[in-house]
Amino acid sequence: MLPYTTYLIDLDGVIYRGNELLPGAKEFIAWLKANNKK
Image (cartoon, rainbow, N blue to C red; front, side, top):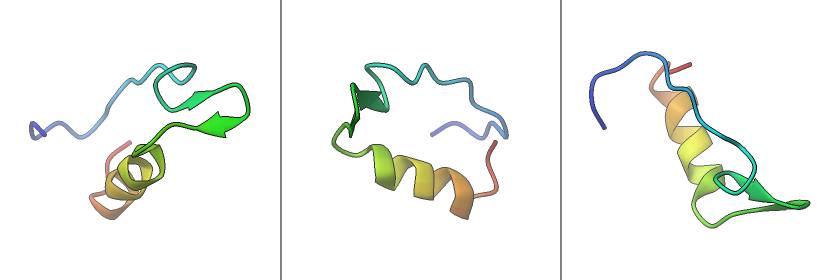
């Protein structure tokens, strides 16, 4: 990803749908945390 420090992400339909995480969402959130992104 580009060298941004902060990301604005829509959650519904991007990170989860209903009560379920979408594929890759958990890994993406882990990547954000591991790379000190907000």
